[in-house]
Image (cartoon, rainbow, N blue to C red; front, side):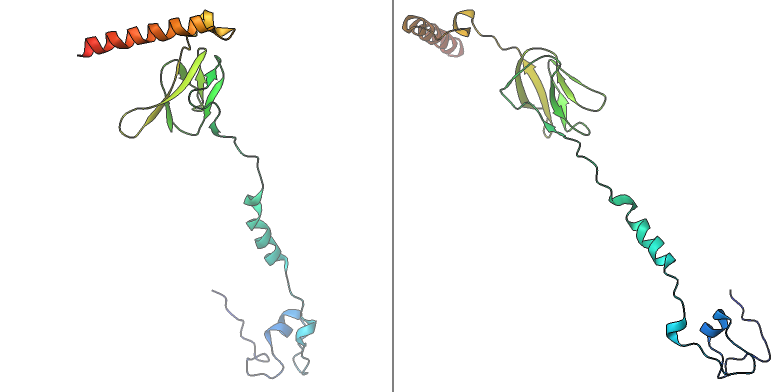
Length: 164
């Protein structure tokens, strides 16, 4: 609590007393010297300090580049990043590993699959991509296409026979 010193010659009823003249030291006990408002210096350093404190958190930083890097049904190499994330929004499935910053890496060559994992979670898995050597380097001939079609039809027929 601030206590104003009691002085006989300075009272609030005195016409020559004003707080600004008292602070400036231009007050005389006998005279009627008064300072105009233009003569009073204004201390703006406090305002400037408060303003500068508000800008401390305003620095720009580069983004974290969090996202899915390899999408579903795309081929992936071992060691490559599939997903960068904060927390486990996506869980690690088969043939992938979860890094210490929750980044999901591939362990094998294969196709990336995003699958449901429980009622409200998802997982990322990588499955081996088997391409027959006959079809990997060149386009198949008409005979090879026909043989593949017949093989597929036989497989379908056996599956229907098993399920029926």
